[in-house]
Length: 116
Image (cartoon, rainbow, N blue to C red):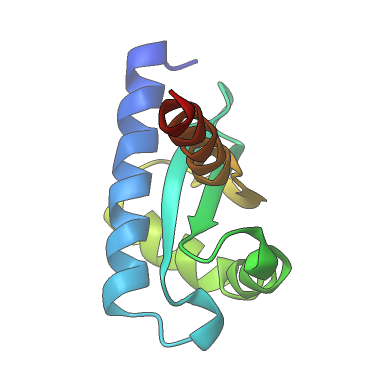
C-alpha cells in the first residue's frame, strides 16, 4: 500500500497531465473552459476521483460530467502511458462547487463592506 505522500504525488501528476490533455488534445465542445480542481486517489489505487468545475458555474455541470465520462477511456489510456503505475485507477468524475461557493461568499462580504 503506498504512503500518503506517494498518493499525493500521483494525484498531482494525474491532475497536471489531465489538465494538459484538456487544453491540448480534447476537441469536445462540452469540455471547453473547464478546469480540474482536485484529484484524490484511494489507497488501493483502484479509483481516481477527479473534481471539475467551469467558469460558467453549475448550469453546465451535467453536460460537462457527461463529456468527461464519454472521454474517460481516452483519458485513462493516455494517462496510463504518462503516469507509470502497474495498474492505472478507474476514473470517476465529480462536480466541484467550491469556486461557485467562494464567489458567493465574496459577493456577500463585498455587500457587507458596501453597507458600512
